[in-house]
Image 1: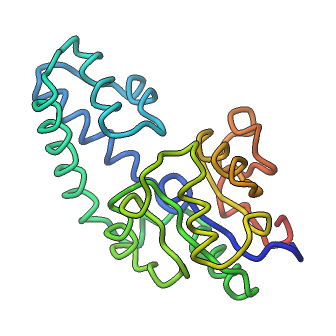
Image 2: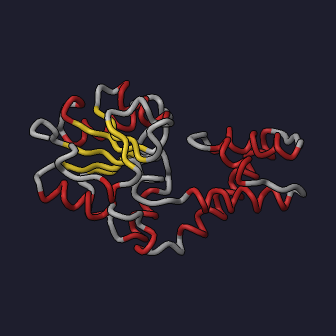
Length: 213
């Protein structure tokens, strides 16, 4: 780890798991439109933008909506989601996440958050961990979705660290691809058979140590 100067963390699936809230909000929307949306259906939404997710949900129900109706539905889903994340507590931080970020900082490694979510600040504040990141890059600061490396490159730039000295922690294939496209090392959080493009894969940050860096 002697040449690692910064660690950039995705939020969802790495620090906290908000996927369950996204699912509940999409399911509620589907139910109000008169059909069910299962967890198996929900797998298709992983790493997909909000509007594309809505298209998939509507496909599942065989429903067609105009563009303006789609915008209203997406806004409704997001309102329900925000309502739920506003109830989050620090107990929802994934095992080992806070400890590992703190260990990085104690070792003099810079830390950044790199998330496409526009609700990142709300979540960090609810979890009481905003102070753990030197730089926070979220959906309000970037325009391109992963696998475009914009979110991570912006993080490195704001930290003042060259990409080759950065390690990205990601749970999605698109995120690993984004890290690689940005010239960074990538640690996958999840299953090795899915995240095989990562330089290292662990099941969670509770299995990560500074030595592994």
